[in-house]
Amino acid sequence: MITRYDLMSESTQIDIDNDSFPDPLSLNYNDILNSKDFSIPPLQYEIDELFIKKPYMYIYTYYSNKPILKIIDSKGNVFLDDIILDINNIKHKDYLEEGEIIYFPDAEELQAYISSRMRNK
Image (cartoon, rainbow, N blue to C red):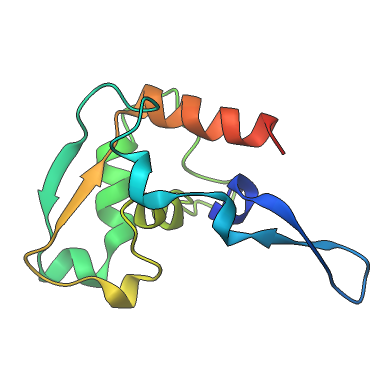
């Protein structure tokens, strides 16, 4: 399962097991949707009450027919929710507000972005 932490660079901070913490400042989410990484305009969706309760359902529905993305793990969990929220500069689903716009990048461009971040680790 890929999470937003997999897209972050390692920091210089080490935990007690001598593993590096991911560096949340290594990704500039404010610029991602407006950058060269996504040339196709993302789908815009106005957040409603149901989206606030189950954002993963909308993310699964939008990306489920896009075979390029591996959005479901072996247990049936959708894993793009934290990445999509982060790209939209939303740090947790509890910060979703009705009436705000959330952006869904094109599936191929999103997969290319994820792959490039994974290679750069």
